[in-house]
Length: 231
Image (cartoon, rainbow, N blue to C red; front, side, top):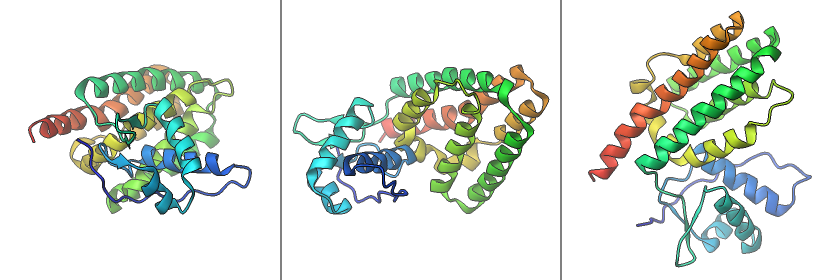
């Protein structure tokens, strides 16, 4: 059963080269990836048009594009909803994320410089602050920036569209999971990633990337799904 909830759609920087349709798509996509809209939330053209102060046309096109990315589910009554997470879908997305991101990190390793390591170290430092402050929006954005910075060092990379598609599908559920980040994420795997990069150790890097994803998602995600199934 879907639910209509009030939610904030975070602002994004307006690129003057974007059409209104592209801007609406980018803004809604960012909101879903951040987890600003909960799983099971019903989306209506009228509601989004009122919230964004736009006509329904660009919103309709943005939702159509998001539905092709499995970020929005089209219901039989013409309404749309943020998909609920299931155990099978969760396990599939996490396994796919591990495979693709380990590959992306390994392929980037030959292009890593001390300047990039310094940049990643600074991102991680700010992330530690956001964990302490409980700022989940910024924590999520910075985590994406950390991984995106690492993977796009490879000038020939082709993985980021796949990675971001997975982030998009996991975003609403992952937001619920990271509310308990201090309980489950007991080892800072980003520090291990940084150490592996400094030593140019591909094996250690792969293990750290996989551990980062597993620690941040799997145990807490499965526990949350179990509790939701008992409600």
